[in-house]
Length: 177
Image (cartoon, rainbow, N blue to C red; front, top):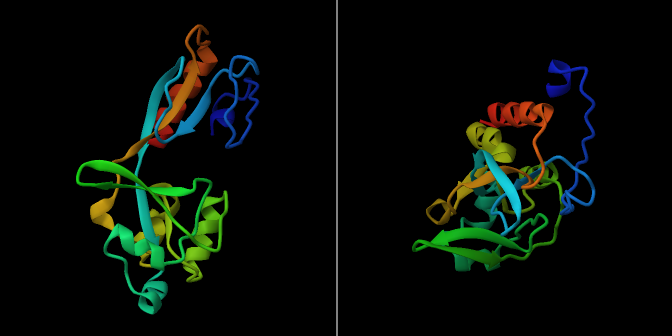
């Protein structure tokens, strides 16, 4: 949409989960998800995201529904790139190590696996909300859901933002709302 709106701009988009050195590699900005580590970068919050822990109704019928965090050990937890899931218990953020027979760096693939009754997933809202609304997935452990976290644009402090980068920031903030 951005390129269509500004066809004269040249855009070099690199999609990766790896942390890049924006200064050394001459990137204008990066999009980071979740909790930001301390950094010398400037950060602009573009949107919020909420994580859901969920499974297909058929999986829960066959294996039962977890009601406490300690019960997750008895379930097949389909994992993304992190080795833990994030929850909140009594006002404190907890990282719970989960186990399962599938690890994948694609949220869409994890949703597909959950829809095929392979286990429980924890993913951001933009992957699962349509499936939750349609009843194809069911949210579990809602009382332990961690607070919403951010979708951020980060950029070097000492770099002057060009007008085209400001246009992109505005476009992303509006589009991600």
